[in-house]
Length: 283
Image (cartoon, rainbow, N blue to C red; front, side):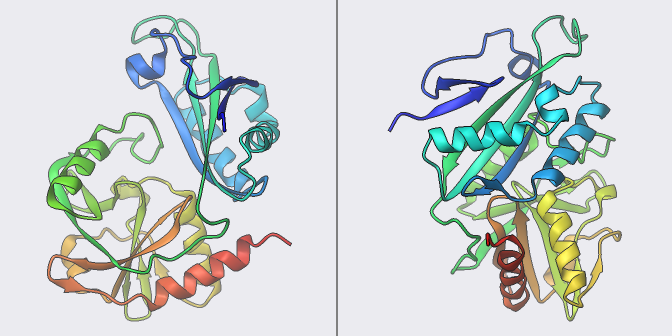
């Protein structure tokens, strides 16, 4: 079946070129994106995603398009999901990029937006059956800047970690910052369970300000867990923990089976995944 994308409100065949070579996302990485999970036409945590996007656009001095500012983009997402017949579980990517013109200094601050959708195997979040085997990628450290928490298209550190993952036959890699603190995984935030306490790297360590990270912290506290999200974490903490799991907007929670010779349980991840599906169930 022919698939489509939505560029500024107009649908185009997904296999045809629509962006010019002067696109600033291509030339300078002058772009942000949100990856979301949709169930039917409902985007999970839509308003959290829009708040994060609008805040990030403000930091980058991007003019916010009216469809995003008024949340009319939700209708545009639903329209594309219907056109592509992605009526159960779907991955949605919304990219915003500054319009062409100028060199490093843009000609103006106006932006365009593009929506893509991709069908998922399930309309709910599913915990992986086999624990992921991961390790630390230390060859390239994530710098600490005011932009470190943003979801931009400047993803070379994650790409290099992904190449390392494939070369080493790993399921994922953890990144570290310039102070050798664990920040996150390639496409996820990371959580550590020690006893009855849940830890996750603080935003001050440079991790992505993930929507699922935010929700799992919230749900964990509601469930009675003590959550520490302001203390830096090092590899040593993970090698002495009981559980490790990863979170992102599309997969929800994925449990880690081991780092190097260390092996982990999955009880907390399983319980929190149940809570996540309860919170996001469609009536």
